[in-house]
Length: 100
Length: 356
Length: 175
Image (cartoon, rainbow over all chains, first blue to last red; front, top):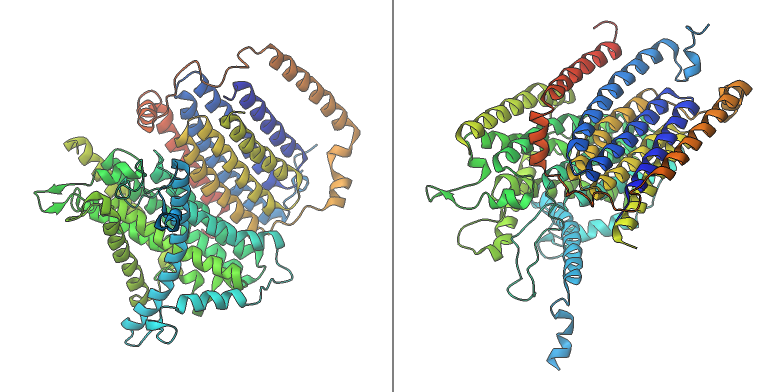
């Protein structure tokens, strides 16, 4: 049997990898992909705990997380397309107008 | 003496051997069905066009698919210099893998002991998942990746356009596809293929079989037509094969492929056709139930119904003109999606009201 | 070793390997393909956690829809490989301030995690041995449409808002 600690460590590891991706990548699309990795790590934690306590609530929350992730990916990519039309660049460094 | 000769044909020693044999048989049968479909496509199209199809290679041209395979095998394996090496090889692998895995939850016969040859009955299905219908849908939506990566990896504008168009078409028709599946799941109350087929045993009024295509008449029929049309669009077959038509985009996403990789795409398309037809037979046409035969022979009825649906696939290809791409997309979004939604709502209302 | 544990390590390796490739290598198309592989690994983990519906929905929605959207965007915007030299020149990672603060924060976080895991009991028991599995689709639907009905309806409004937003933001000016 797989102890719950394994699932939590895996989920933490995936979350950390996703966070590292958000900080390190220089391409906004890959940045969004790292955010998706983080969301999936959270999903895994929810389902693992849902199974631990024998309820179905963990799986229900994953539906909502997936739906929100889909909506966020769609709008995020639309924003990226609009920004690309403006600046012809996909690097986060190119959009620093509001930086003081 | 006879016993030692018949030793390879002895019953399987345990369940694992029987199961492995079943998986091997289904794998071989799917590949063989691709070859059979190649032959029948050419023969049926020829008969529809009032000419002979292949008739020189072997009796009645039956060795034609083997000749095709040998030809493809011996062609030179080309790869454009600017193509993305990893993705170029990965794309046909994804296509073929997706279509084989999609057939895994699909049953083609009742649980049988093969007339007492086996000790315990084996289900004629690789995996009886309790979310079988959804699993089939999920894996066939992974087939999009094979096409879009093929279009990109070839690094040529025709391929890229063909790949993008083809995958946009596939994901658009997945909506109507999924709604038709949802209608059937609603009617049967389960997502397992075996339970859906078993719910279609028996007859209404002793005459009309209790198939889902006749359920909640005419909404089951509408669901079947939607599913089949979306299936034709999903497998990129005519009349929805704009992205890969020879006259339009120089064969679209598989322009730059040759020899074995092309053979894999080719085979993936035919196996996808067989899988979609098999699922349609199971969900709508009663699977392996039929008159005059006991359930142990149900797979014969399954094959007959499968052959009928595959013939309809060929019939559609060689009768109807190709649908232009913008008409195709507007058909998917503006006609099929609303019809599928309304159909689902009416069937849901019917299930609640009449407790079907 | 139990077969569950072997399968867990197999799927976990795929998930972690895929995520590392997403973050670590430079071609954005390879990132999308690796994340598809990672999500398929995660789907296998959900099956191990006796949540088959979530596993299948993960493939349909994430691998089959969201990532196809990502792939289309990457192809249409023709996102190129990230340039290594430019990365070295301009990345804040190479400036001293953020690196030092980041290193301190990472050490603090790691210390906290180790402290938390060392305090966990029940680390030895298998997942869910205390309570029976509750995972039929019927039960899921029942709970979703009774206890979580409001969230469900709000989600549908969210999706419509996202659709309209995406069309407006990415549409051409003439429309």
